[in-house]
Amino acid sequence: MTWMEALPPLVIITVALAGMGTLQDAVHRVAYKEGKKVQRDRFSSLMDARDATVRAEAAAVAASASSSSSSSARPSSP
Image (cartoon, rainbow, N blue to C red; front, side):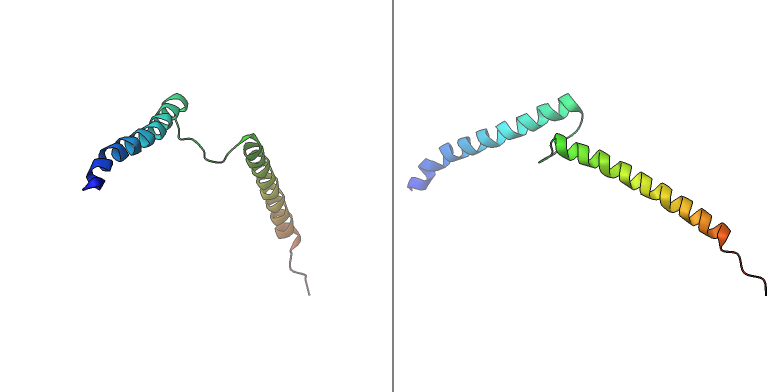
C-alpha cells in the first residue's frame, strides 16, 4: 500500500498551501476591516465613481424632465 505512504506528505503540503492563503486573507480582513476585492484596481474604483456620477446626473435630468412635462401637459380647452 504505497499510497498510504504518500498520503501524509500530500496532506501536509495541502494544508500548508491552504493555510498560507487563509492566513493572508485573515490578515487582510483584520487590517482593512473588509474582504479583499478580487480583480479590482485603481482604474476600477475610478470607473465606479464615474458611473455613480453619471447615474446621479441622469436621475436629476429625468426628474427635471418629468416635472417640466407634467406642468406643460395641460389639456387643451375646446
